[in-house]
Length: 317
Image 1 (cartoon, rainbow, N blue to C red):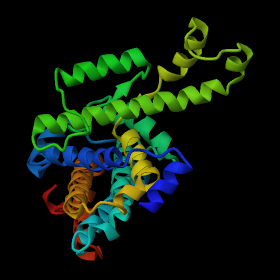
Image 2 (cartoon, rainbow, N blue to C red):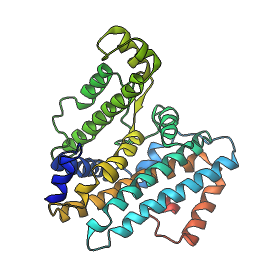
Image 3 (cartoon, helix red, strand yellow):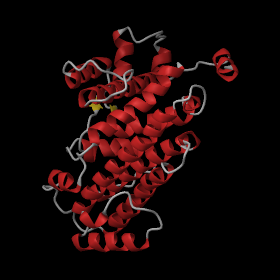
């Protein structure tokens, strides 16, 4: 293949097979683990003890706005599934998936404390503190690592695996295989964040003044670990990395080369399932936090006036 050979000759390219497998298998694993777990009944039970927040009309309005954005993006993937050729829209589907996740998380933050972070990184950080750490996220979206020093990442991943031997190289067909994919992607994301922060440390005045060539010495490692200990890898961090990989660096393998139409079609369906699951989770949490009498008004208004097909039933929340 001329283009692939050209890219390999002039840049560092990921292996085509692994790039494609890592992209579709993670989403397949998430879809398997969300199946049957995000019904209205299950989510009502999960959030039953969540208390009503003190009245904050401005924060409520932000939560409603972000929910609409999330649902619209999830709905767009449903519309994409109706097209005959999934290759034509697969990259757009990844972007819609990401923004369904991103705006759902912002809705949860608005409903939690009224927070309105303006960057993706800040959203992930506050979401960790206000939502993940308080056990307000339902599996498989709840796994995270706080303190991404190498030793702690290894410790957390080993505990999560509990002997599970599967990873992203195998297309999951069972819950155990799906869990292996999920853990594998969390590990990869934590290691990517390690590398990213290490590169920042290498550019710091302290690192340069120490004339360090690596992080093998105690002093250099202390500089690195001061950055890594407060850092985290949660689902939002994974989603942001995933959008970048699937839509930029690895994008050629979703639109070029071997014909994997069947798997790409399944991939687009999985993007829809996972985004709708995350979005409805955010909706249930938000409904528990906003002014109680306003939720039914919001639901009725959107059912009547939304110009897109809602990805789940608002009037059942």
